[in-house]
Length: 412
Image (cartoon, rainbow, N blue to C red; front, top):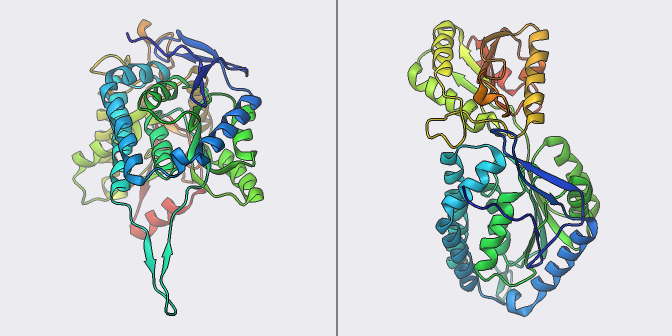
């Protein structure tokens, strides 16, 4: 097992102890504590933002040509790729995801930095069409300090999707990872620092939404927020950003429908449905959590799907055979179970799953069986709310018009 980050924060290029609320990172497979650390305080957020603004305005960074920034991003990509095994183990300890998935996420993060480096190498500004005897040119300028707020379900990949474009454009970045998974972003900070990014341009500040997230959004020197997370929180960020006239990028929740028509290759469709809802243990905003099956093949398809679901291997994230790993946290496992309990009260039928797995190897972890529920209308809470777990609602439909109407009848 690789050594985990020591819990210090990366503040404006320096490793410091946090001054905010205590954060406990727990291994979802068995409940063991990975690391106890202090998150950032509001004062430390201010320090990081102010240092970022100074570093971003420094000619040594601001005047750096795009192809020179590309070299830096390429070094970061190289650093991630050289440490994929280490990152994978840290992220699996942090989130409970399988080593196979966390290695893929680390590879994706490296690819994101490499892609943005390539974009810088081919960056062109635009000669605009003149309206007289003169030339005009549009030039892209950095915004300043960007606040990046990422979720716990796919650390490093989500971090890279925010950090790489912001640095490529010449900005400074303050990254707030989720409190349930703080360690992976701190490892990314180590790699970025080793790549030679000028001090002050990047900070990683785990902490509560109250102390860190709210301060990032409200601070006058933060010129953009990129947020991935829950829709309710996203609405609040959008409202605060509107008061500042600040641009935001929001990737929020989902209740995605998967649709199977009678003329589909049913075995291929089963595989697609399984991956869509049970990969990442359903902890994805694009999880296919509502399944619509044309009535003519409904019984046949659902029977095949249930049989295939029961064959999925639920197990330890370090086991190479595991297909469904534990959920991120015991509290989240209990929240998923609460959604299922409410569905049963609404008249749902459990076709498989619907409970934690039995066995000594599962007792201390935050496991939940892949679950398929039938018998609910599309208006039921389970078909409308984002569960963010391995829970699938199956519903029949008659024709294309019917399934379009049902699929789009949702707040998401």
